[in-house]
Length: 165
Image (tube, rainbow, N blue to C red):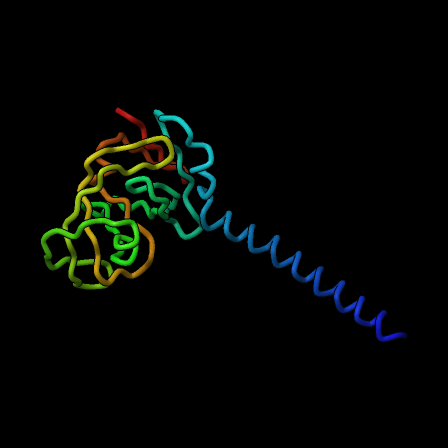
């Protein structure tokens, strides 16, 4: 067989392997974050947002803080919306008074802040209490009760429904 033919066969196999990887990565992402497309359908103000539980048991979804896109992890155990410091700095949030906070990863320094707007799908809340976390365990924003308490929440059969009051 000629050298050119061998190279074409290798290129074909590499292309096939890449295509299989791309399809599998997309399937895995949809299983881990079934709400990834939420922002795409959230053009107008909604009365209800329905989130699907991810494979790991958590509810994740894209959203916005002060107009900036963020990745939310819904956390009904978090008092406020908790933002990693690097993200807070990049979107221009002002850090207020410092205090000691207890997180799932242990104690850390945190700063009080105020969020002009927080939105999830078509649901939006204004003037939301937030916390900037100096040493977060992840890059996700914890969507805590300072936002969630403004809506009716129902969880059943792997779905979380947030409804405007």
